[in-house]
Amino acid sequence: MNPATGTGRLLIVGGALRSDNRPVYQAFIDSVPAAYPTVAIVPAASGRPAHYAKQFADDLRAFGFEGEVRILPIAVKDDPSTEAVDESQWRDGGQDQHLADSLQDVGGIWFVGGDQTRTTDTLLTAEGEDTPVLNAIRSQLSRGAVVGGTSAGAAIMSHTMIAAGDSLSALTLPAVTEYAGMESQESGQLLLRRGLGFLPVGIVDQHFDRKARLGRLVRALGHSAESFQQIGFGVDEDTALLVDLQGKTMEVLGAGNLVVADGRNARFTGTDDSGQGFAVKGIQISVLSAGDSLNWEDGKVTALGSQTLGSEAFGYRATQGSGIALANSRLDHLLGFSLLDNSEMRELRRYSFDDTSGRGVIFRFRQTDESRGYWRYGSGTKDQYSVVGVAMDIEPVTISVALGH
Image (tube, rainbow, N blue to C red; front, side, top):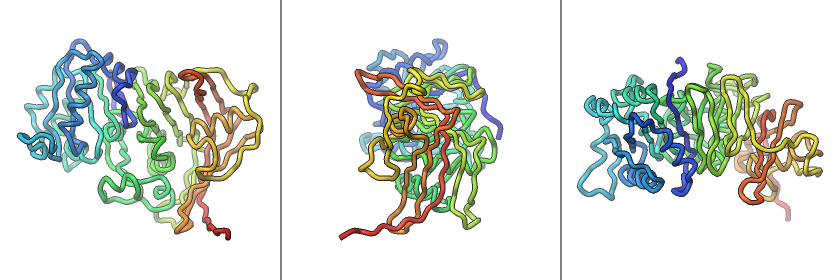
């Protein structure tokens, strides 16, 4: 599959978007071209399609959007809040040519959260081809529109879509081909599906910080045979990537981070049929904060703040291990406070395991000569780190736990 092309923008939100997140909403509003002033909402992913479409429309209005907002009749679940309408009858809405033709004045398309497979099932045919509505959305994107989405609406953005799986299962168990339902997104084996491919490079994952999805994103990269898909973009909650398709850049907005996992020069071993545990050596990890940007073509990162190299604020031996008793559980904190802003550390090890089966993995984060850390104050006196080029390896381990008496 060839990368997509376009001249418009994408706004990829990692889920749990707060209604007061002005930078994200403002970025969407500002990206709607004056020539196409209408916004269309695709509620297909949601179990409450009318409710969440209306919520996004209300949030746009609260930030001053004055154009028309339409809710497209594309959904698979009935919304209990609308007695007069059965939204489950909108299952074939993506096939409606009249609806597709009506999108010619639309400059902003928004995909709500929920179950990403509902969106792909309604906008792709059984043969994997674009429906008329999806083809019209692509047309508007190529004319300069903005396509955005949150949670499930972020997952659909890449060619390869992560449909289900948690990190530990993805790293220690074979991938699956059958979808077991939304519960498998929280606890289950890795499932990859065809996405909508608005983003021409990489694989997107969302709810990245809260759901600890680094492992499953890296495992998904190991399934990708084409180099343009071997970059992972993990977006935290209440955080967005503003993507300029023509300039091939993305900027981080909002409260959290973007984690970039570059596997193009990594070595993946262990396949689902080999009997070996999955392992990878040489993934390059970067963690970008609000205001930072990345050019995915040349790999250039523009990070705000002052470099930590040579002026580290800390000098202590960080504990190697796992668990909630260790500080800096967030990746930006771990690689900032404990590694790149710490003159005593060149490697950090973290373990994850299932204490019933004993299956687990070790994550090794290594500071190399190419690694760079950046520090600045965020809001008030909140330390904010950006990290570029930390090497990461993942290896399988077997762990037993003995309780003391």
